[in-house]
Image 1 (cartoon, rainbow, N blue to C red):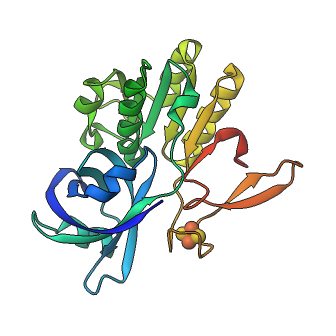
Image 2 (cartoon, rainbow, N blue to C red):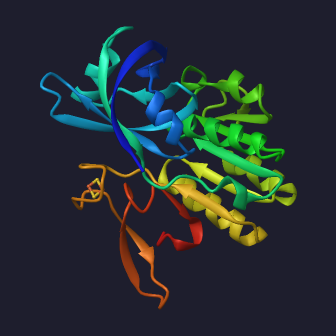
Image 3 (cartoon, rainbow, N blue to C red):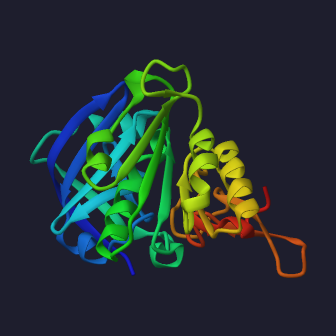
Length: 255
Ligand code: FES
């Protein structure tokens, strides 16, 4: 279930290069939110464009989102001030099933795929699991939310260029941690998700992935976010990332 809510901006802070953390007063949406879901925010004068933004974390009535400025809509969003009101639709989509990942789940985020994993880690802790997090970034300047993850669980950080923490990719760490993992969940670029899914499959642990696709309507009414999935008979079928996802079992995805 989702609702349309006029939400007041409680905070809008620049976290890094083109990255913003926004806190919204969203009592109705936070009642319904699950980790891995997203909100669709009307952006721009005239509010014609909605932009999908992952839910990072929430504590009713406050909803935390992290977004990257990519175009007109997100630029407009980045300029909102405390007290401004936004038209928000959410929570939307199918989130992570943290309970299906066992007692020692590993949550992996790459770049702008990191924020939604914070909500997952918190949910896992709430359910009594002992999660770990692996966070991958381009370079030191792109590192976000590290302290929030460290407050919750054992956290590994990698940078592609070695300018901070471990030089390498999240998959390097996952290969070392997979033997003690009961399940894996990930959000980030598709090649990263594909590599993670292969490692999890080889180890025989369940894996859920959140797919990043372009979105239009956000509610299953257009075809912008189509993604190829495996049908039961081995044929390819198409799903909507916005409605059937963004989270899928990795085994379902036609890589
Ligand atoms: Fe329109 Fe998914 S964004 S169907």
